Amino acid sequence: MKELEERIRKEGIVLGGDVLKVDSFLNHQVDTAFLSVLGKEFARRFAGSGVNKILTVEASGIAVAMAAAPYFGSCPVVFAKKGNAANQSADCYGANLHSYTRGIDYSARVSRNYLTKEDTVLILDDFLANGEALNALIDIVRQSGARLAGCGIVIEKAYQPGGARIRGLGVRVESLARIAAMAPGQITFAAE
Ligand code: 5GP
Image 1 (cartoon, rainbow, N blue to C red):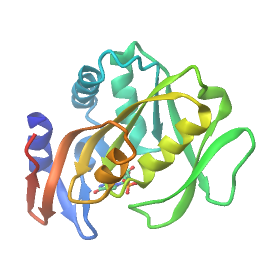
Image 2: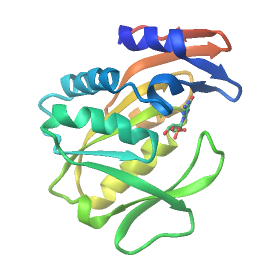
Image 3: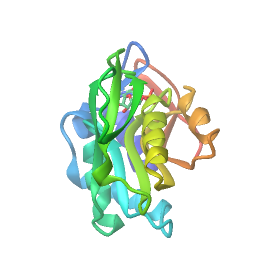
Image 4: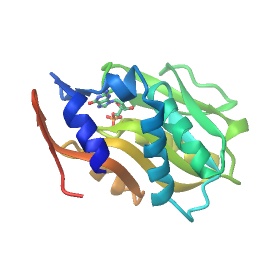
């Protein structure tokens, strides 16, 4: 998506450890009008897939999911809560994962009340790197018996293994911007 690529080029800061900082519109200050444009694009890509619920993980995924929901019939947004990896509870679906940005293991959990086999779920998140967050959310959808329509990502770092890992599970992944390479002061996008 050209507008998103331009925004990343203009405002993105490449940090060490393969982290792209886009705090000016996505991860700290949220440009709500721009995220609404991104949300509409997810709806265009997943049109006709029967999505009745959006699943994400706190915290940065929530803004993306909230921006997209109005274009999916104002469907509910469920966000997985993060907790201690050892803490699982019987009334929740849960999966453990490794945090890319914090370098720690934690659990993502979703109440059984908010995800059921009647649901068709779209998973949304801000970034895709190694696929840990998506893999955990996909696991949670499978535990619930819901149908998975696919995953929508704002920025995929396509040179990292997450995209191949998740697509290799047979899951549809739609990324609005795909970074082929990045270094301080230089970001190259994969061809659309
Ligand atoms: P993964 O689970 O695919 O390894 O990493 C994705 C998660 O880590 C996302 O939920 C996102 O919050 C965080 N993340 C991964 N890479 C980046 C990055 O380059 N910049 C930012 N801001 N977050 C990232």
